[in-house]
Image (cartoon, rainbow, N blue to C red):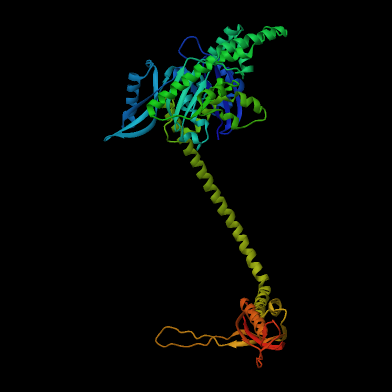
Length: 596
């Protein structure tokens, strides 16, 4: 895969990101934007190329895919509804409507691109909703002229609002939700609303870190660069005072300054509470602009936005994003795709996490380059002839590659056939010699196979006979466990019993009867005795019989009771009436054994 280079040209600085592949960061740097005094957004070619080539070699640029962001002050976006029409008619209608309705009015050198949002019907008429994006041809020509010096053509020139979505992995939940992106830049703060990944609203307000720094610089009576260092160091300080109570805040500031003077601290040291009060006005201003954008979207779509993403240099200021999140509510987070990428060892993770929001737009434009191959509309301000030339070059490259691959495949097939033919001839000769050599062993092997077959048949028959053996030990163990303690076993015998196989009826005119082979079963005969009365002997023998019947091994249990002598009533005092005298009584049991 070709390296990807994203260049974000801002009002104050140019941010550059180089990716070896989509998820591996190899280089990033920034430098002041070298704008020319004459011309609207024109860039000094020599300074720009000098800065770029000092970090990225021209050879690397030539083999890379380059994407360039258009500065925010050159971009306008509007959303319109048009009747459904062909693509050519839509391009003409988009230009006409943009020149007629866009605010501020486009200039004579303005150029337009569009991205479709949705299609819907009103009655019997189908409509399509599109977002029209305005750029300036002078800027595009300026960028092409700069890179043409190196023999490089950018793959895409597009505003950051159209490429932000590509900073998220494909399949991310942002593609299925509505979200607002707040880019707090140096001179401008940009607000972008994406509907399920598609641009819907973009507005830019001329208010940014430059204005905030100027106000803090004048209020604290410090130099501008000192105010910048203070903001980067302290960010938005955390305080325990209710900032809505102005009187209490003023008293607390005076008290802290008085204590600092008593402690002999230098007067140049900034009071953090005073700095936080200065920040509060700016935070409320940004919050108000975000809410204004959200209210406008809610009026247009009758929907709410819950996800808010912060990016740009302002998002990297400590505490600013968290303060805005507290004011706005919802799910707020800093959008910084670089921090989740693989990176070279030369980068420190803490540095990347701190500076990553500044390079979000550059990373997004770089990650948007692979999407140009898809058929979905992508806002790209490259001239049509360059786009067509890229398509032709890609087709020619594909054709040349296909021819080379085909030639290599044919050559390899021919070489493979030649080698295989030679190998087969040699193998055939070896096989003939081998056949003569192993003729005698083959004959011996066949005889051994026949003998083995006879042995296997006999072994199988022995195995079947072994399987029919009765497990005498387990049966005796079961009988010993279920025999009541008062019963004495005087005789136990097990012997086989032959059963006649069932006759099978077959359908047909003449029914034949075939006798199946007799199944081998076993009979268990038990003769036992107990010293007891007749009734007790019956109970013990019956209990023994029940236990035998409960065992799955025994079936058809038959019981022969002991002999009953002449009954003689006898009663001793208040004891029970005894019908028979205790004596040694014999009984027998017979059961079939199931050979499991």
